[in-house]
Image 1 (cartoon, rainbow, N blue to C red):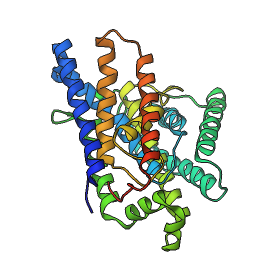
Image 2: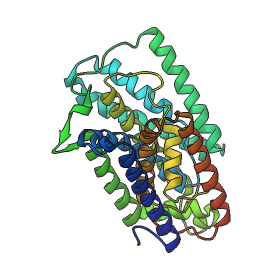
Image 3: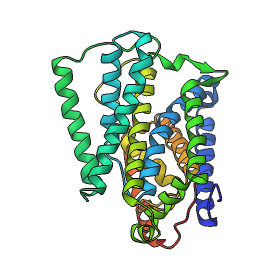
Image 4: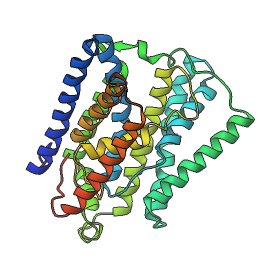
Length: 319
């Protein structure tokens, strides 16, 4: 099975990486200090957060879905991390596994809503996002207090050699994702379900099981990202996950995936995460407001959706 896919997808992935190179060169020309090692480490960390969230989003999109519950899965995970650990680094040994199970559980609920109840993924995951927002607010208002432990806070100071630890975690998860989608039966079934649910079921594939697992993975990666972002920022706060909803969708779109499912590559998503990170860093240098970044997200998603409708027969099993 080809890691990158057919010629069309390879061109789209190549365009994503080329865009990243162009943005980087422009940034270096405008601001030479942009290439300083400290700034590159910061950019690598920022790209890691988008890339980790986009792992789950990619898998859900490949299954012809979307996950809009990401912001509050991340936010509630960060808040619960502070509350449960309450400043004790030793508590992370059980708090982190518990929070990862929490992310899996939220994904399970999303998957059940989409598959067993037949509700639109947009409705189910948006409703879940709202429920998590309200539930977390109620719990915080009543009893949840605490601080992030020193072992998690200020995670940006930790490195593996010259590389930020967040970036290393992303690369490990990226390799696992590519292998998972390329060389496992689940990966093949995921693409089959995303391409055509009815045909996949005729072939003996349980579309319900595949789609539920896809949403569980998305919940898991959102929880991982929530923990890492909280550690990087040194605090947990309600809006922690808000920037990662449309950035995760846009990263998938820039990477050449079809929003309609069954066609795409996490390697492309990786390129998309880098592009969005560079774009966000370049805007202040060009004296442009963050509003332009939001406009870019919207235009990318609209353009990709339009292209997806024009290529319904080009979906293929790729990673």
